[in-house]
Amino acid sequence: MEIKQVGVLGAGLMGHGIAQVVAQAGYDVVLREADQGALDKGVGKIERQLARAVEKGRAEQADADAVRARIAPTLDYGDLAGCDLVIEAITEDLGLKLEMWREVDAVAAPEALFATNTSSLSVIDQAASTSRPDRFFGLHFFNPAQVMKLVEVVRGITTTDQTFDAGLEFTKSLGKMGIPTRDKAGFIVNRLLVPYMLDAIRAYEEGVGSIEEIDAAMKAGAGHPMGPLLLADFVGLDTLGAICDVLFDEFRERRFARPPTLRKMLAAGWYGRKSGMGFYDYSGDEPVGNPAV
Ligand code: 3HC
Image 1 (spheres, rainbow, N blue to C red):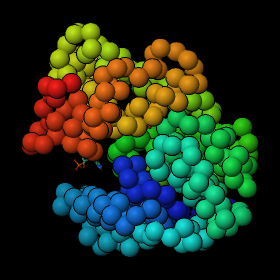
Image 2 (cartoon, rainbow, N blue to C red; image 1 turned 180 degrees about the horizontal axis):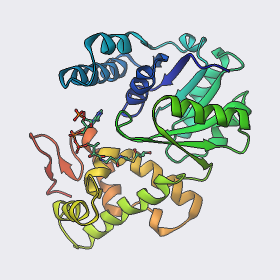
Image 3 (cartoon, protein in one colour; image 1 turned 180 degrees about the vertical axis):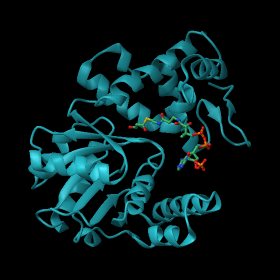
Image 4 (tube, helix red, strand yellow; image 1 turned 90 degrees about the horizontal axis):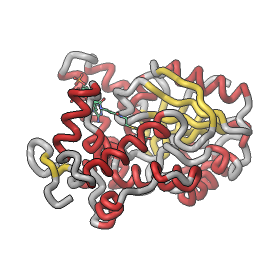
């Protein structure tokens, strides 16, 4: 089936980036959010990224305008009726996702494909709640979606070859590298990356180094673009907490358990960069290590 119009559910950290990437590849996008404030914020971020691309000479104004014009923001599930593919990128909470799929399943065309951008939840748990488990798969983008090359294309146990191939083909059409993977918690990247970030928190708890020292060491010593504690803030500590809970629940291994520091930071409402406070304090021009952690 030809994909022309794509629905993106959620205009948050991942959803706005996915919507932009999909629109840049020439698809019409319906971007659905639950409330107007979050929708405006997500669309505003896309507009700023497009303006920056023009400023830097990476895009013509007319192309940036055309990308923006292909994105139709909405609060109404009914606007997803014409979509050939719907990608969800809402909060990492299975209950909320199932509630949302119930609404989408009721309005989407029977032949439309559904994909989840979940970081760690099982694809089958969502697929089975819809009328189309055969046309359901995972499309896991990385933050920032506009920049990161990888998309994990996840085959659930009910995903047909036709659906999976369409997912790989769609990923390629976005100019991304699609890596096929199976429906195992954390897929490839988070299975390896999440215990690494959690270990960095434990290393900090054990006094191996300060926040800045641990990050600087991994940048200079391992060639990473960001240190693990800045990366944890960047991913969102709430998201990191949700992923490690899923992984711990699935594998029952200590390496996936929440370190006490993470638990306390979440209780304090410190979710990382998006909340302005995490392992770093983001209130100034440059992030500085949070002395209260
Ligand atoms: N949105 C859109 N574009 C962005 C961006 C954002 N949030 N952040 C940076 N960019 C773009 C910038 O516009 C810039 O492009 P330009 O020079 O043409 O304008 C380019 O990326 C480089 O940005 P900067 O010069 O500001 O900064 P860096 O060179 O340090 O790159 C980074 C920033 C790309 C974020 C880099 O630090 C990086 O790769 N960090 C690691 C990111 C990572 O590991 N992501 C995966 C997280 S795990 C995940 O997402 C899985 C999930 O399930 C948890």
